[in-house]
Image 1 (cartoon, rainbow, N blue to C red):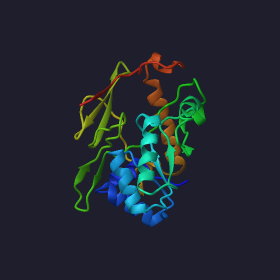
Image 2 (image 1 turned 180 degrees about the vertical axis):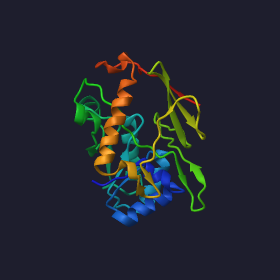
Image 3 (image 1 turned 90 degrees about the horizontal axis):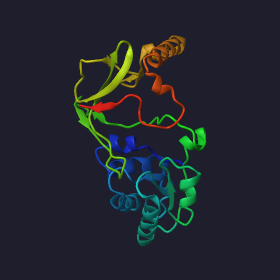
Image 4 (image 1 turned 90 degrees about the vertical axis):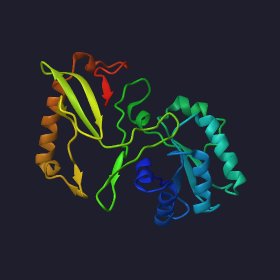
Length: 236
């Protein structure tokens, strides 16, 4: 279908710039992501930029049955009757069934498609929290969508160990800490893949690091059932 990540929107100085760049690259038939900041404002902006022939808008947060109906009504009022609505947000067969009566045109299913119902899965989510200007200055960015707001600013996570076992993971915002093992490593710098991540050596290093990280976990972290995090995460 063609859509974009929240990181794409956050990388631009404004939502308008992001929408214009996407439409310029992919044409008005593209799908614009409208829940990074404010959905009604983004929908109006999307139709203004893409025109009534805009392909679709995507909603990735909030009370989907209510939001979808509101967005459909807004699109129709703006003359974009043919613009479709796609929804995402950790969907499974139950949430899709609950949306049966809503005017949804397509669904984006990720985690539950891979793992199946009832099984725990690691939430691997990519978020943009900061970027640099042409002058090399760091700018903090954050998503404001309902129930999915993020904390802006560069993060410096570290793991605190006691007798070789992980006790907590602390995420320092803005500046690094000094009380544990650093968890953040560079993979891409200035558009270049880090040398340690390339080829067979990079794969071997990843496997070794994985084994060390797993060995540090407490026994509770190896359970199969859902539950509270085995290691608390603290923001500072």
